[in-house]
Image (cartoon, rainbow, N blue to C red; front, side, top):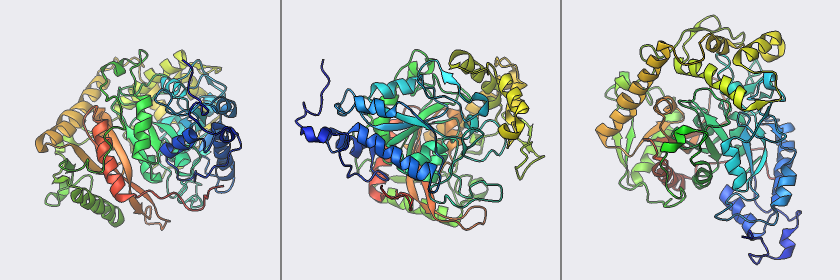
Length: 546
């Protein structure tokens, strides 16, 4: 069947010009508006791509030098030109829309897939990751690769958010000039999907794809005033993503609105024979359906905070005053929208970090304030990392001499001056494991994680109080949801200031709606109602439309 063109849609031929003027404000335009502009002939895919490339040159490479885009796709304009006579449709909902993907997501094209590591500089992928394949099928223009915290923040203890040895340091667009004496941003961009978030916040792409193992979507989304969905593990294929831990890894959208996130989730959530976890997924036909302003009415929202039990007020009890006010205001909005607010602390048996779930690792980071002290990363991360990374290097990577984690460790040691600014203590610890997940300590730690986060944590809490969702400040609830494999949806909540007693410009704080497995649609509906009632997102100043 012939695919519809603008001419088929009755749009004037003059609108097909690659130089058609853009009246959208790209710094703040929702992806849904961009799709409408493409469909109506207001803009072409080529003109749109050129405009984003111009913003990247002006603000990412120059100006405040945000450094969020690690590499551009040399074929982006060629791909866009082939989509100039296509319009977004049910079959190709992203036709002509430029999207960045995090540089730990494989692309089987001219773009390297490096995870930000000098050891993988120039490394290619044998084929597209499943999420990239789905984006292309939906018509997206893959604009380039976003910078990230190296290896998604599993290389070294206290690695700054958004730093990689290959890509350098990503800056938060709300305070890009504020750096400490080590050259680290005072206001972090959030990590590890730092570049993915900053690029969307700064209007360098229509949307982006990031990944999360524990907080790597939620944290940067909060810091940059974005919407994100951290999906249930198994909703979005992990195939072709440079891994940390298969039991928690997932990819997800980073957007300016809830509707945009739902649009992308429609594309990304698909069964994949390359990822067995997707075979058990449950999803609606359309995540954008039933997004309504009255969706909060009658919902029971858990707020894990009980002032009568301050010793157990884990998530809200130590919030700084401005963060506490943002959350208090958010809770008031939910009440005004008709939600029943249930204030009750999480049971202490649901706290993360129980017996045998973490591993002592000596902090060897030369720039860490805690150098020489013991860190306690999760056992599951370090044990799954070696096995999963070795499989990725075997099955996906090409054009690289790195065949195993041990090769990367050796490369880093041989090139320490450039590759190891912050060390590699976590890689050293992971490389000491067998790499086959046969160790009893790994199996015990994984079982304990599920017991505390899922059975005695989210499940017990939501069952006891008959909840539809749990409300967390910022990314504070990321660990319990991630270890359970459960979804979260973040939406901008307000603005705060100050970091470690240092004055800063205002920067965003998000609010998170978390729930049970496969509850993304419910969480998106709740987040949409809150978003429409508050309209809290404001783009960073100093990055005007060009």
